[in-house]
Each structure stands twice: as structure tokens, then as C-alpha cells.
Amino acid sequence: MALQDVVGTRDPSQVPPWVQLQPSGPEVPRPFLLSHGTTTLAFRCSHGVVVAADTRSSCGALVSDPSSRKVITLHRHLLATTSGTSADCATWLRLLRCALRMRHLSEGRQPSVAGAAKLLALMLKGCAQKDLCVATLLCGWDCHGPGLHYVYSDGTRFSGDVLAVGSGSPYAYGVLDGTYQYDLPQAEAFWLARQAVAHAAHRDAYSGGNVDLYHVRPDGWVCVSREDLSQVYRGLVFRTEEDGDGKEDAREESN
View 1 (cartoon, rainbow, N blue to C red):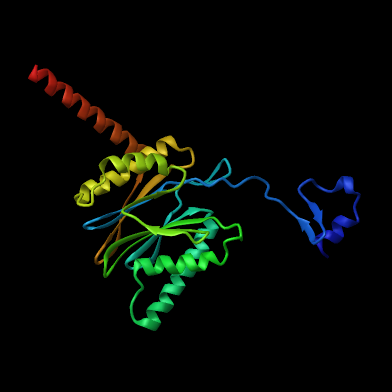
View 2 (cartoon, helix red, strand yellow):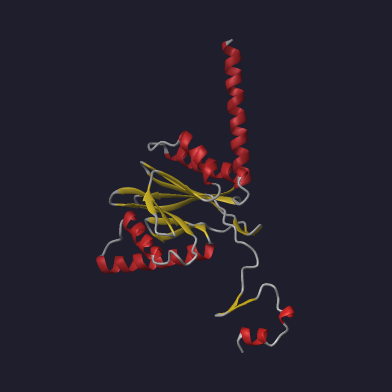
């Protein structure tokens, strides 16, 4: 029996407020607004692409999963970060993984990072009016070296050396823009990525949990670490205080 048949036999005053009859059938609105919040970032260096993301998944004002994974593997040399609706991101990146595999089987080689971004943008553009929320960074290494591209659910795509996505991205950019260089040593690049996500999580209510750190190299990606963001932030504050004390001591000695 259809839902409108059941509802139609009742007194209209007894119909629950979340069920509204329409000419085409009942419409059940969402019980609450789905807020999207995260911090994902990536930047290109001479030794590869450094990728970092927090692990807090929120549903409205609720933390639904404090330790989710927002970095998804597409193949051995390509990663993608997820920002937006988790189900939409997971579905479309799974479709992209299948499409890349089919291209690999038919052509004998993997598409470039730019080619993968263009393919995903074309797939999403056909559903631009379907209320999707997908914002992803494609991070990989191909014949052109390290590649970093942003793709949004309306078909927007562009490349860059430093990209951050999510509600915590303004705070992350504040850290990245002051320190980033293309020729950063590997250890300093890893430290910068952790620092940017930790500062973003400290200021952004929708970011938190842990920080996942990945590195895409010529021989493929590696998962570097997963660390608790509160511990990372405390370490950054302690390091800053030590640096400040050292500068004051040097200033007193010079005087």
C-alpha cells in the first residue's frame, strides 16, 4: 500500500508535520539541515604531493564519526580528498575509480592527473542540478610530475600548487601561505601540513579528530601517519613557546 493511500484515509489534522502531500505524492523533508565541515589540503613539492585531512564527520550539529577517512585511493599514483556530503563523495569517487580502471585496461596506461580531473568534472557536470555536494582534490604523480587539481560538483575544475577545501580552509591557508615553498624539504613539508590542519581544527568547530598525512611520490603514494589533532596542536604551541623563549634569551645576551 502506498504512503499517500495510508495518509489519505486519515484526518488531515492527524498527519505528521514532516509529511506534506503534493500532487505527485508525499514529500518527506530532511529532519534537520546537513551541515558540511572539514579541512582537507594538499600542496605540490619537488619530491611529490603532500596531502593532509582531518577525520571528523559531522551530521548537523552532531559528530557522527570522529575517525573517518577523507583520503581515498584511486590507484597506486592517485589520491582524492573528500569534502561535502560523504555519501556523494564516496559514490562518485568509486565511479571515477572504475572509469580510470576501464581506461587503463583499454589504453594500457593510466590517465594523467589532469585527465582524471577532467573525466570527473564531465561526469559531475551532467548532474549539476541534482543537489550533489562533492568537492575533491585529486593528488597524484604522472609523466608530468606531481599534479594537484580541484573538482567541484557543478563541473568546476582547476589546478594549483596549494589548495585547501572545507570549512577550515581559510585557517589552513593562513598557515600555508606564510611558509609554503615548492622546494621545501620533505620533513618540513610534512610538519607544515600537520600544522595547517591542526590550526584549522582548533578554530573550526566542524574539523577535528585526527590528521591523516599522505605523500604521493614517483613510485606511488604512502600513508605517512595518523595523529591526534589535540596532541599535534599542543606540540605546535609548545614549540612556538620554546622558540619565543630562545629569541628572548638571545636578545638579553646581545644586550
